[in-house]
Image 1 (tube, rainbow, N blue to C red):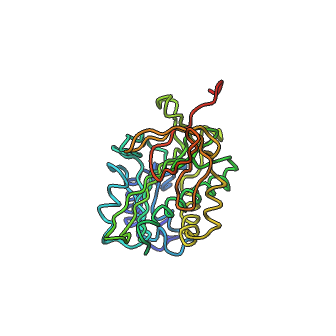
Image 2 (cartoon, one colour; image 1 turned 135 degrees about the horizontal axis):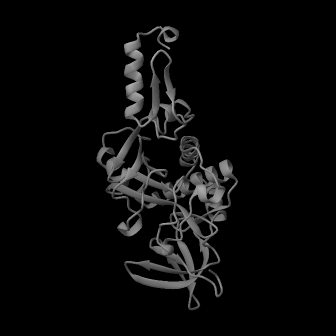
Length: 299
């Protein structure tokens, strides 16, 4: 190996040690050299970036073995880092979803946060969430031919079970967005059988019956996000977001700071609002926690 690469054996050993610290299992044998014990799906920033076809998103990509929360890390660097910086972790110790609910983040999932710096007013910030949710849905449908839908405002479902959650946090000055951190939690190659039943979770491994390449999926998502982000104010993006909704037509209950509201979800407005028919009145909801109410006989 050393002679083929034109380097010393000590240099080879140094690189092998570097790979081992990243988690690769490498066997060594006297006079024979080194062998990769098994194929790993580790989140390696070098490998991800090597196959990344984006123009700017993910060019600064930071991978960690464990963090409290990728959103927390992204927020701590958001002001000084470049637009499109990506934070990834193998596990999170304090992952969170909407309303600060805990988000289970075991090894095998994709726990990723994007730092985006759009030059938009605060009242247009919802378009970022719209663009990212469409991009991730496109990616899952294209790579795995799965029927994935968007549950308002920020979850992705497969046959009613959550496979991905999105959490956006924003810093704004006056009426202009300074930065947005968009966190993605994707149940890729994880076992969800131990999750609470009420979470109604699934994973890509469970749906497909086999593991997926997280690196391929991350590369695809970043490419799709870059495209939808650049066209996030278009009518076409809104229409695709609305078309991919699995909330429309459902009986829902919305919990927000102003109280609970139950009714039928009849439309999604261009400003991101969910339009609900409740007791013969039409009401608009811009933010809140949405629960799909089950029809009689539905499990």
